[in-house]
Length: 200
Image (cartoon, rainbow, N blue to C red; front, side, top):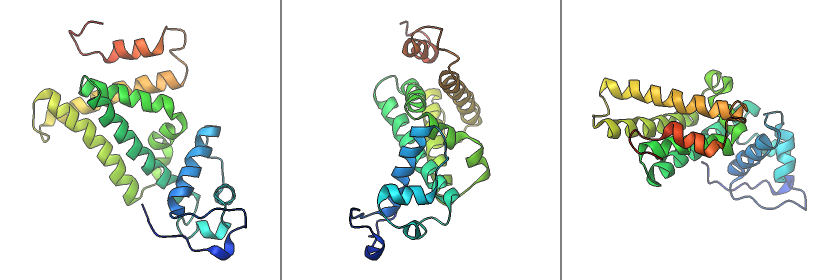
Protein backbone atom coordinates (compact mmCIF):
# COMPACT_ATOMS: atom_id res chain seq x y z
CA UNK A 1 0.00 0.00 0.00
CA UNK A 2 1.03 3.58 -0.54
CA UNK A 3 2.99 5.24 2.23
CA UNK A 4 2.86 8.75 0.81
CA UNK A 5 1.67 11.52 3.08
CA UNK A 6 -1.65 13.13 2.22
CA UNK A 7 -0.90 16.85 2.10
CA UNK A 8 -4.28 18.22 1.20
CA UNK A 9 -4.26 20.60 4.17
CA UNK A 10 -6.49 23.12 2.47
CA UNK A 11 -9.24 20.55 1.94
CA UNK A 12 -9.41 19.36 5.54
CA UNK A 13 -11.99 20.58 7.96
CA UNK A 14 -10.67 21.95 11.22
CA UNK A 15 -11.97 18.91 13.09
CA UNK A 16 -10.29 16.29 10.90
CA UNK A 17 -7.08 14.53 11.84
CA UNK A 18 -3.91 14.01 9.84
CA UNK A 19 -3.49 10.82 7.81
CA UNK A 20 -0.04 9.51 7.02
CA UNK A 21 -1.70 7.13 4.60
CA UNK A 22 -5.05 8.27 3.28
CA UNK A 23 -5.37 5.29 0.95
CA UNK A 24 -5.13 2.84 3.85
CA UNK A 25 -7.54 4.96 5.91
CA UNK A 26 -10.12 4.93 3.11
CA UNK A 27 -9.81 1.15 2.71
CA UNK A 28 -10.22 0.66 6.45
CA UNK A 29 -13.24 2.96 6.57
CA UNK A 30 -14.77 1.11 3.62
CA UNK A 31 -14.28 -2.23 5.34
CA UNK A 32 -15.93 -0.86 8.48
CA UNK A 33 -18.97 0.40 6.55
CA UNK A 34 -19.15 -2.86 4.63
CA UNK A 35 -19.42 -4.97 7.76
CA UNK A 36 -21.88 -2.58 9.38
CA UNK A 37 -24.40 -2.96 6.59
CA UNK A 38 -23.47 -6.31 5.01
CA UNK A 39 -23.50 -4.45 1.69
CA UNK A 40 -21.30 -2.21 -0.44
CA UNK A 41 -23.96 0.52 -0.55
CA UNK A 42 -21.80 3.51 0.34
CA UNK A 43 -20.16 6.34 -1.57
CA UNK A 44 -16.68 7.83 -1.77
CA UNK A 45 -18.23 11.06 -0.48
CA UNK A 46 -19.44 9.22 2.64
CA UNK A 47 -16.00 7.70 3.16
CA UNK A 48 -14.38 11.11 2.79
CA UNK A 49 -16.70 12.42 5.49
CA UNK A 50 -15.87 9.47 7.75
CA UNK A 51 -12.13 9.94 7.33
CA UNK A 52 -12.24 13.73 7.52
CA UNK A 53 -11.02 14.86 4.11
CA UNK A 54 -12.63 16.52 1.11
CA UNK A 55 -14.31 14.26 -1.49
CA UNK A 56 -11.72 15.38 -4.04
CA UNK A 57 -8.92 13.99 -1.88
CA UNK A 58 -10.22 10.44 -2.32
CA UNK A 59 -9.74 10.61 -6.09
CA UNK A 60 -5.99 10.90 -5.65
CA UNK A 61 -6.06 7.24 -4.68
CA UNK A 62 -9.21 5.79 -6.24
CA UNK A 63 -10.70 6.76 -9.58
CA UNK A 64 -14.12 5.52 -8.50
CA UNK A 65 -15.94 3.36 -5.97
CA UNK A 66 -15.14 0.17 -7.90
CA UNK A 67 -11.40 0.87 -7.55
CA UNK A 68 -11.84 1.27 -3.80
CA UNK A 69 -13.80 -1.96 -3.57
CA UNK A 70 -11.04 -3.84 -5.42
CA UNK A 71 -8.55 -2.49 -2.86
CA UNK A 72 -10.88 -3.55 -0.06
CA UNK A 73 -11.12 -7.06 -1.50
CA UNK A 74 -7.33 -7.21 -1.86
CA UNK A 75 -6.91 -6.22 1.78
CA UNK A 76 -9.47 -8.88 2.63
CA UNK A 77 -7.38 -11.53 0.89
CA UNK A 78 -4.28 -10.41 2.76
CA UNK A 79 -6.12 -10.76 6.08
CA UNK A 80 -7.59 -14.04 4.88
CA UNK A 81 -4.10 -15.36 4.08
CA UNK A 82 -3.01 -14.45 7.59
CA UNK A 83 -6.01 -16.32 9.02
CA UNK A 84 -5.07 -19.42 7.02
CA UNK A 85 -1.42 -19.38 8.08
CA UNK A 86 -2.33 -18.59 11.69
CA UNK A 87 -4.81 -21.47 11.68
CA UNK A 88 -2.21 -23.84 10.28
CA UNK A 89 0.31 -22.75 12.91
CA UNK A 90 -2.16 -23.19 15.78
CA UNK A 91 -2.29 -26.96 15.39
CA UNK A 92 -3.29 -29.74 12.97
CA UNK A 93 -1.50 -27.96 10.14
CA UNK A 94 -3.55 -28.14 6.98
CA UNK A 95 -6.76 -28.88 8.89
CA UNK A 96 -6.12 -25.92 11.18
CA UNK A 97 -5.97 -23.77 8.06
CA UNK A 98 -9.45 -25.05 7.18
CA UNK A 99 -10.74 -23.86 10.51
CA UNK A 100 -9.02 -20.54 9.88
CA UNK A 101 -10.90 -20.29 6.57
CA UNK A 102 -14.30 -20.86 8.14
CA UNK A 103 -13.44 -18.64 11.10
CA UNK A 104 -12.53 -15.76 8.80
CA UNK A 105 -15.83 -16.08 6.93
CA UNK A 106 -17.81 -16.06 10.18
CA UNK A 107 -16.00 -13.00 11.53
CA UNK A 108 -16.11 -11.05 8.25
CA UNK A 109 -19.26 -12.14 6.40
CA UNK A 110 -19.70 -9.08 4.16
CA UNK A 111 -16.01 -8.92 3.27
CA UNK A 112 -16.00 -12.66 2.58
CA UNK A 113 -18.92 -12.26 0.17
CA UNK A 114 -17.19 -9.34 -1.54
CA UNK A 115 -13.96 -11.31 -1.97
CA UNK A 116 -15.62 -14.38 -3.44
CA UNK A 117 -18.68 -12.84 -5.07
CA UNK A 118 -19.62 -11.59 -8.50
CA UNK A 119 -17.75 -8.32 -8.06
CA UNK A 120 -14.26 -9.83 -8.01
CA UNK A 121 -15.07 -12.12 -10.92
CA UNK A 122 -15.84 -9.10 -13.09
CA UNK A 123 -13.39 -6.51 -11.70
CA UNK A 124 -9.65 -7.02 -11.79
CA UNK A 125 -6.52 -5.20 -10.64
CA UNK A 126 -2.92 -6.24 -10.18
CA UNK A 127 -3.17 -5.78 -6.42
CA UNK A 128 -6.31 -7.90 -6.17
CA UNK A 129 -4.90 -10.61 -8.43
CA UNK A 130 -1.70 -10.92 -6.44
CA UNK A 131 -3.51 -10.99 -3.09
CA UNK A 132 -5.94 -13.66 -4.26
CA UNK A 133 -3.18 -15.79 -5.77
CA UNK A 134 -1.17 -15.62 -2.56
CA UNK A 135 -4.13 -16.97 -0.62
CA UNK A 136 -4.60 -19.86 -3.05
CA UNK A 137 -0.86 -20.60 -2.92
CA UNK A 138 -1.12 -21.01 0.85
CA UNK A 139 -3.94 -23.49 0.33
CA UNK A 140 -2.06 -25.36 -2.40
CA UNK A 141 1.13 -25.48 -0.33
CA UNK A 142 -0.80 -26.98 2.55
CA UNK A 143 -2.22 -29.64 0.26
CA UNK A 144 1.21 -30.41 -1.17
CA UNK A 145 2.60 -30.82 2.32
CA UNK A 146 -0.28 -33.05 3.36
CA UNK A 147 0.15 -35.23 0.28
CA UNK A 148 3.93 -35.20 0.51
CA UNK A 149 3.98 -34.16 -3.13
CA UNK A 150 5.72 -31.38 -5.07
CA UNK A 151 3.71 -28.23 -5.71
CA UNK A 152 3.48 -28.99 -9.46
CA UNK A 153 2.02 -32.47 -8.94
CA UNK A 154 -1.38 -32.53 -10.75
CA UNK A 155 -2.97 -34.07 -7.67
CA UNK A 156 -2.26 -30.92 -5.66
CA UNK A 157 -4.53 -28.72 -7.77
CA UNK A 158 -7.32 -31.30 -7.73
CA UNK A 159 -7.20 -31.89 -3.98
CA UNK A 160 -6.85 -28.15 -3.34
CA UNK A 161 -10.07 -27.55 -5.26
CA UNK A 162 -11.78 -30.35 -3.34
CA UNK A 163 -10.71 -28.86 -0.02
CA UNK A 164 -11.61 -25.35 -1.13
CA UNK A 165 -15.07 -26.54 -2.12
CA UNK A 166 -15.53 -28.15 1.29
CA UNK A 167 -14.53 -25.19 3.44
CA UNK A 168 -16.15 -22.63 1.13
CA UNK A 169 -19.43 -24.51 1.03
CA UNK A 170 -19.33 -25.02 4.78
CA UNK A 171 -18.69 -21.31 5.29
CA UNK A 172 -21.67 -20.33 3.17
CA UNK A 173 -23.97 -22.81 4.89
CA UNK A 174 -23.07 -21.20 8.19
CA UNK A 175 -23.37 -17.62 6.92
CA UNK A 176 -26.76 -18.34 5.36
CA UNK A 177 -28.09 -19.83 8.60
CA UNK A 178 -28.53 -23.32 7.20
CA UNK A 179 -26.76 -24.94 10.17
CA UNK A 180 -28.38 -22.91 12.95
CA UNK A 181 -30.58 -25.79 14.13
CA UNK A 182 -27.96 -28.54 13.83
CA UNK A 183 -26.15 -27.95 17.09
CA UNK A 184 -23.04 -26.11 18.22
CA UNK A 185 -21.44 -24.59 15.12
CA UNK A 186 -17.86 -24.81 16.42
CA UNK A 187 -18.26 -28.50 17.21
CA UNK A 188 -19.82 -29.17 13.81
CA UNK A 189 -16.99 -27.37 12.02
CA UNK A 190 -14.46 -29.36 14.00
CA UNK A 191 -16.23 -32.63 13.18
CA UNK A 192 -16.43 -31.86 9.46
CA UNK A 193 -12.79 -30.77 9.21
CA UNK A 194 -11.30 -33.26 11.68
CA UNK A 195 -8.48 -35.33 10.17
CA UNK A 196 -9.33 -39.06 9.87
CA UNK A 197 -8.35 -41.07 12.92
CA UNK A 198 -8.08 -38.10 15.29
CA UNK A 199 -11.22 -38.96 17.20
CA UNK A 200 -12.84 -36.13 19.12
